[in-house]
Length: 358
Image 1 (cartoon, rainbow, N blue to C red):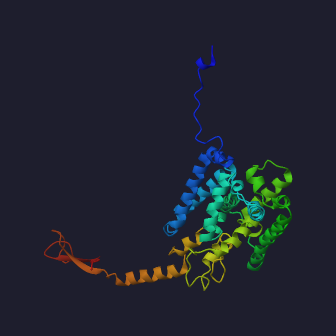
Image 2: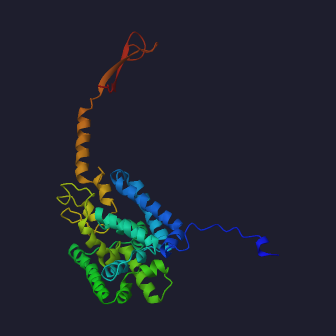
């Protein structure tokens, strides 16, 4: 039978032309992942835009944050394999000086979209949005620490002067990797294994025991000291902190009493990014919004507690005192004379108190 008379398979024509660039075909193939990521970023944007409303509902914020961190680990990290890395920064800087091509960075749509969102958030409020909400390894540490706190695992914190000096470690690591990248990006990428992201997320711990032990050790340490890797070692966080120094806004509110004498937020900050003197160090802040919950809580924030107590005292002082009301009851027939409330023509008089409305 001639081929023209044979049944032809029902093949839907592709909307992507055959001669389209490779990155366009990749974006089309990953359109589902792109949609889910875009929805997550839109949801996070709404949280940031309406943060003043959200922080007044601490239970809602806690549930939303835990849910979003789970989304970050499962979808962005393990499914989408979109954990950002300091290698991305080094590659970008190298490309600027050695023939920049957009097509190179468009090959991974999830990474490109995340970096675009992070660049905007860096310009607006600094590094905290990525480090506190969108970093899968950071989200793993937070979730592990929350479980540890629930089971009363003791929390260990270095003294304040040690804590502030340990901040410098991640910047030293970043400078070291940047120096290596000037010689060879490949060499810098090998030393960038100080990031456990490839082991914990890209390869799902399916790697040689040395890498796995390093990643697991950092996660175990997070049970005792929240986000210990992010605070002191992460070169990606250091790079974002440097870029975020030119932020346009400071949306985290403070009071004149913060630090003088109030220390509640400084003590409770999960990464200790709040100085005992009061200011928030945006280079280290992970934008968890816990301090803003306290800022609006009139049972926790000392200035608000004092205002609430004064208001309650004024309301109590303005409230009218109870007014005595005398009720006259007729004596019951047949009762002995002279007994109030019983017999004859006597009357029993009892008093009650009734609060009159002003």
